[in-house]
Image (cartoon, rainbow, N blue to C red; front, side):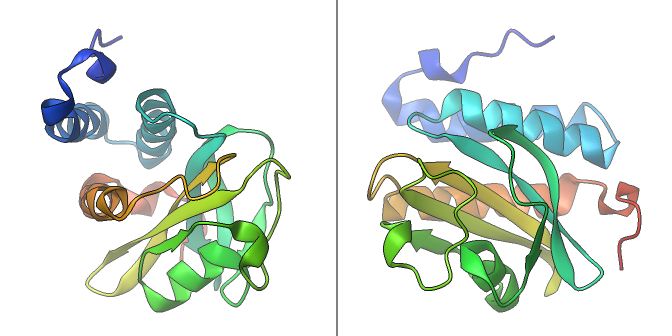
Length: 168
């Protein structure tokens, strides 16, 4: 197991250290499920004030629960429901400061108060979404949205999406 500890780096180096650490994890294995499982664990470890970090995989016209860290979650989300569905449908990141004010929000964990969802796609072809939830209102800043969009591109590029059964 890696001894990489990105929390212990100076704040000005945090983003580059986290990016490099995640890239190392993704290239250390070539099995998509393992890649996303380690990515969810890594993100949960390096980000403060999260209560859920994980992935939904686009399969059969809907989002299906993939590897995650946190409480049990909804297993299927249609593209016309919730923050994840909206991000997947539009292929645009969604940063919601107060999920209780988002029409159609899906409350898998009542403790969640804010959410950041990053669509994962290659050349406009949806692969899934990265979903981050926090028990703190307005937890995610614009700068984090931009950073996680870069992380989303890394995930979209390095994960072996063909390893997910039934992908269409």
